[in-house]
Image (cartoon, rainbow, N blue to C red; front, top):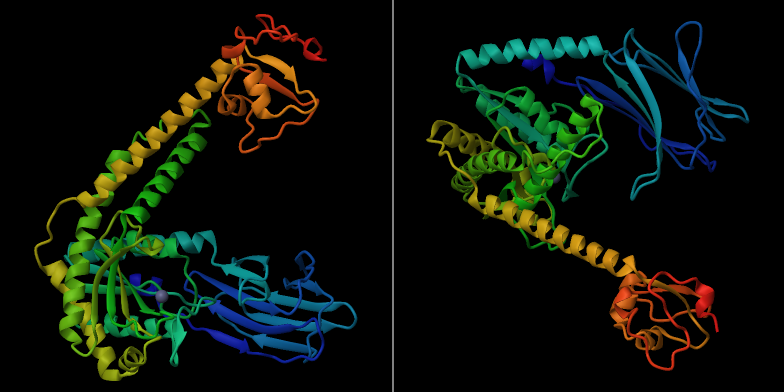
Length: 491
Ligand SMILES: [Zn+2]
């Protein structure tokens, strides 16, 4: 069932800010779980060395983190959920910390290090995922459920609460975006749940991270009719406020077209076992058209959403419809928008976002916006701005390719009968150029000198053939028709 697929996931935070006095210590352990996978994250105060994972006879897996401390000495977490039954963290005197875990049958694990990042310490992650069979079964169930919904003409609305897990999003005025948008996502869903024409599904129903691309993939797999990503905004200018609705920008879309076509081509290469270059522009125009057609609908959804948010929320300014290259909006299959419910960084907006009445109005606005779109007449057409943009980018690319082809050709022809010359003491690019009656820029180009103006004595350079016949009188370094050995030029 779809409901089961995106069903509630619980989170457990075992330890928060465990304080240790020693230098190398585990400062935090977190557990994130989605219906399909779970992560255990260990924050470390040092860059660790980790042993390979080994298994004990009773099926317990373990690995050691060298040179670390774990102040409580030992701690057992009895988790008993579908991904992990037990986690044990134990300090081994003078050696480090041993992490041992017991998994239910068929759960797969992977552990890796995450290096220090801005505002994030060194981390060790254990990824746990359900078995391939369980995944396949899940997809199968999902397909049946979707077929049933489609047969009843029930429309599927994918609500995507932004951020989650390790990524908190904007945090201001007592609002943590990931928590806030999850609450709002559920509230928005409750509006759809009361309307039998719709089936609303949350991309995440707990506190865990979903990769951006995966979010629109979920919508596509579910055959969703619309995708609405829900966010709360932040701006360092605290006066900036209001709701905003985004849909895909031409620049974002063109990047996605390049990526998808490249992926497609790579796949063809891999499947066919050939690595000849296939004309990468073969499917471009039809792909652009698909994108432009979806965007045309996304704009209609965005405009209806913006209008409804404004009507439902007279207390909140409406900053209108905008376009941006958000990764989460890249879907070519269905109209996709991103709603910023307000600015956490603005005091008045934050007050409104936290107010229960405000939340109801915002959720209602989102519901009505989607409803207006799905129940109204959806116009077919193309985002002509995008098509124009795509064509401009393509012709600029072609012109650039042509320019560099000509430059290569010119250089090749100059080199073809060029002569080798050994630079003498005191000579500069300018004097050599004038000696052989050749332009400084041509000489520089043929020798790939870039911005370099100086020549070293003894350096061997090439003199383009154009100048081969024109030798200044009195020059004793006679040049023949073919490449001359450099000693011929030696003084
Ligand atoms: Zn956000």
